[in-house]
Length: 360
Ligand SMILES: Nc1ncnc2c1ncn2[C@@H]1O[C@H](COP(=O)(O)OP(=O)(O)O)[C@@H](O)[C@H]1O
Ligand SMILES: [Mg+2]
Image 1 (tube, rainbow, N blue to C red):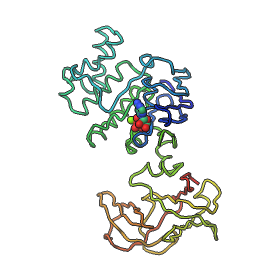
Image 2 (cartoon, protein in one colour):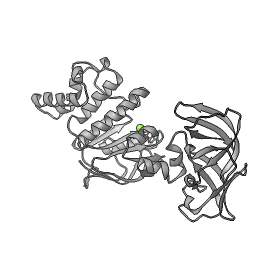
Image 3 (cartoon, protein in one colour):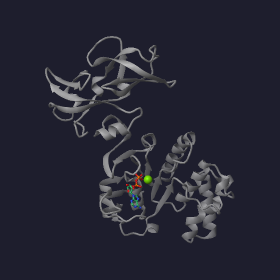
Image 4 (cartoon, helix red, strand yellow):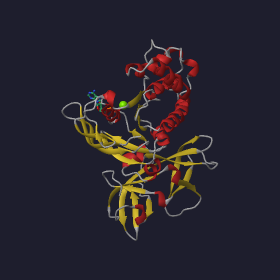
């Protein structure tokens, strides 16, 4: 198992724009690290620079302390899996998995032995003579996984490998990939734009936007302690609720919503820095807002605009300052769309951002 370190990595494809700007992070030995962010934020670029398929504009990448910027792709001991599988259509499953071993000039005997091992691991032993077109999407993806592990890579790179699969299969393959990675133990970087996939698979997540790393943390820390409003909004579904307003210091710390005048009572514990009067955004997750029977602090009245019944839970939509918000609850709901309700926000779960979106 190896450790990967990225130092001041920049990538420009053309003169003006940074596809990746000043990226600094590391991947620990045997870790499953997920790069996540909207399309175009630079995830694939980082992966391709790691594999040596794309030149690094400036900065260094180290494998176990060894600079690999100028190491040829074939000498980096990397296994890579893509969204479109990239299988050879005219070759059988056996030949597809064997391909990198053949290139490495392994003996016929060794190739047969290794492919049989791999077929067990990725559960394709009965399909070795088929062509890719005779396989399901999940099986094709397993061939791609098998091929990627053929040469016992030190590093496993995944670029949106599940995007072409239907929803049910995608969820199953998440577990398969994680189990495979644990078995092999290769240090892994997994790219996805899907925050649920990222949250369920990653030991740690690197959240990116416009080529810039926004936060690096475990799933729980990203969810509970986002550093900025982008991360807060990107992680979690339904999204965190955001209220626009200002902080007022007046008999304690208050947040007053702009148009409605709704007042939230806060304390220093809602802040990382000392609270001061300024324009701000208040954030609270949908499960931290409750329907209430009585007027209390951090409680105000609103009208239900829609209810989504999901079986286990319900999402109740409402508006404040003309902006849609929601709460989620597992309680039985007796209310209907259009009803006036009281909602109460759990004060400990409120977080605050400054007008630049940085956590206060
Ligand atoms: N070969 C290329 N030439 C020019 N620009 C590119 C090239 N590949 C990617 N880009 C640009 O770099 C940025 C990051 O792209 P990419 O790493 O593919 O993002 P992601 O994988 O997160 O969707 C985007 O703005 C994209 O248009
Ligand atoms: Mg990409």
